[in-house]
Length: 567
Image (cartoon, rainbow, N blue to C red; front, side):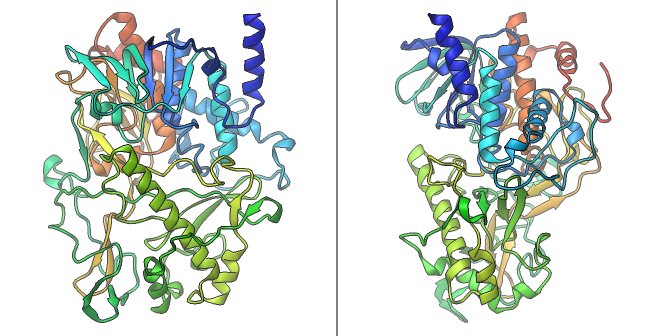
């Protein structure tokens, strides 16, 4: 009877809605303390890949997700996957994006439009190795669930770490982690695959929030970075609530100045937003209503941007329309979009996320809600407000949320785009010198290939007296660079059985390249391999021999060198 039940739950998982957890969640035997070889905390794309890899290597694994959905940003709206050079991604991450390609080869996958070629992809790859880096959110989650259903990973949803007292350590080792519910998990090795680094922080591992100064690592593009006038804004946007009257106070979210010397460090965090999935197909569209607590003053910058002629300039013209667009909408299959920020008056809620990384759960939820309300209000404003030009209102009026996405969350993405939060200060810190090819590492476990990118960190009053921006960055790198194994492990005097592939050890500048979902997935694969090796050899994670780790990674078709080479 047990075998029949297992078969039934496997079938159920493979053909269920995306919200269906992995089959193994049904097989869990309830107990106060659960013991595994490896605990993976965080059901992000990195966490799913790490859990699958560890299970494939024969270890008992639990994947704990604080929410109710798996896949993080990859299934949370970031469907136009930022990958940099697709040839740098191998292993299970490459397998995942091959599965995406395979899914869309079936005509039945195209419900709302005829099957078509997706633009913006790489050159065709050999038969059997084709990949696709554009995916609908619900499809992304379904594929993650299927990946897990092929293993014996135990998936536990809706369990949040007790961040105050939930991590028990002895002799620099994590012994157990306890959730807010009281449920406790023991393991030999722990992986923190959250975007926030909550397990890492609770374990007493060193980390940083914000930007280091240029002086700390002898960098040139870290720290405070006011853009040359007029920054990303047209000249002449008055910053005061009453135009021309400083005594009236500043408009919301505007600082009086950029806050320090150029290159100094601070606690500023690059802006967050939600990657909205929109459509203009009437049968699958949900209108975006005016938020109940709509505050018109929040959008005064938008109105003033238009009034000074911002839409007539060269700021952020849409590749789709050739005209100014307040949204960056890349098209996914089935007439859907991955709608992202497009400039500094867009979906980013600039300056309103600085407290998020260290905030408690209640405060984080409030910050998330504020970001959602900002974006809903922005879309409603673009569609309806009389201070928006008629042509612009008509253009945006045709768009709405997608009826068959995020169906248990009012069609709103599950995951706020946490572009960076905590960053570990580990055995090795990746800096701009690594990303720019000026400093080579001897122990790469994955590659970064995206340019060093940061969204705005604050809006401020420029010396000329108008609104400008600070913190934005897009610095080209000459070629893919190696990510050190030592950048995902803590210092040996802090914790010896924890690996951190997402909130890795990197400066703000370098993290701007590393923070891409396929890279997180590749690092999750490598982290799990290292964890299994540490268990097999009965050693600390800092003692894992790189030659053995490298051999295992190459065997699994991980790409750790550029250009790729054999062991």
